[in-house]
Image (cartoon, rainbow, N blue to C red; front, side, top):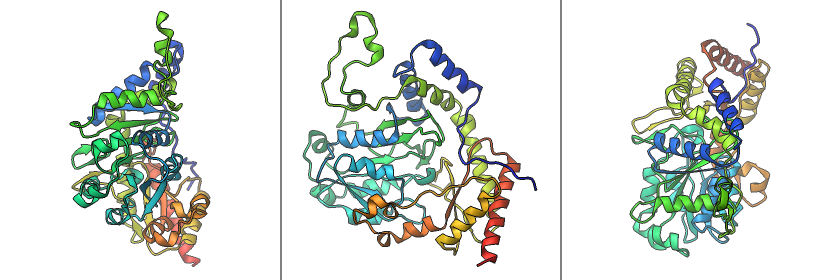
Length: 410
């Protein structure tokens, strides 16, 4: 069998994307402008969420929204131990403490552990849709709305008093296009943040989007949108495009904001991708996922990732394969064997307590045994439209051969 070179997650770039980027360049306007606004409107149409604010990364979006809610020193934010570091770093950059909880069998945070982690210092919960599989948002909302939990919530800002409970901020970096209980992601948490990083289902090279879904009777979503856009551009009352309009150049700085805006040149990539996301990109990712399921489902040692249920459907961001009854060292050896065939795979993720920055702060992996078990047996297989049947069969064969080789050698 010939050796194939199969990258893990190349960006989807076609002629339509090239044209959109060139049009942005030819327009003479490449920083935040009309294409960002168009991208926000398109995301709103596809998710059914009326107000979407784009920013320069999902991490920035998490930080900005926590800041909007007044999260600061002395506060606690509950996050899963099984996630990428950015979830925790967004909390830490505001001076707050990440409180980690273990995951369940589907990789996502265990809601029963969330309830036990809540204290009077808890200001927010950040569920993470690992690999594009939605968390149980209804269960999380039920927890934060329990009378006893609401009673111990300590509100210190106007927006905290208005909401009157712990904020639910979804880290949906992986899950644009996923569905939970018949609704697209963006419709369940108070805020939902998508990532458009280079390896995500939709990319703007770097970028993110904040979906505003606060209780409509208590909050004016358009007003919240304007605040987030203002704060993401240094607290400046006019963006560069507005300032360029003749005599209207004068602006003011009304808030000590951040520099988190998305430029038009990046939005152009996302626009061209999003136009064909539901018709092409997402269905093709689902095809790859289903093919893996059909081929790997024949292997008794393969634990297939969650894909579809009565309540949920995945965005098929990565194929998070777990292998039964192996050690972390054996998993690593299998990955080494796969790499020799030209196939790139990955691991999603190293649980946070394994990483130096969190270990030095007292987090212990022994407190999150489900997360460690999931990580120690997980290998992420590539998922993207360019993977045809021949390439998928090649990937699966390399995984099977690598597994057999490691198990034969003990």
